[in-house]
Length: 111
Image (cartoon, rainbow, N blue to C red; front, side, top):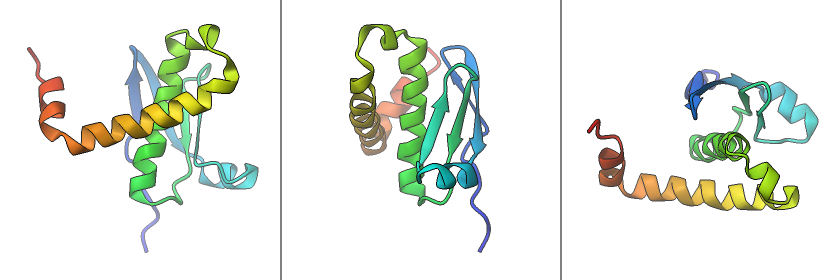
């Protein structure tokens, strides 16, 4: 079986390039975490041992952490709520986008 590949190598998040890295070994040693966003260093770490469906959710989840930080929400919303908010929004947004490809096409129009 081929080793899993990163789905993307970087993301543009509000004009900042965030590197996306395979951190499977590190994250599994920590506590089995599926992903992590290092806002200050502009990179997202992914555990590639998860299935593709879960990996899509995890990548979007970590991108939402980056957006959350970049938009200054850390200053306005208690830290304890961050994970709950992001978990629900990322999963909901992923479902919305995958269930509505015409919406994605409309959002991606150049004009």
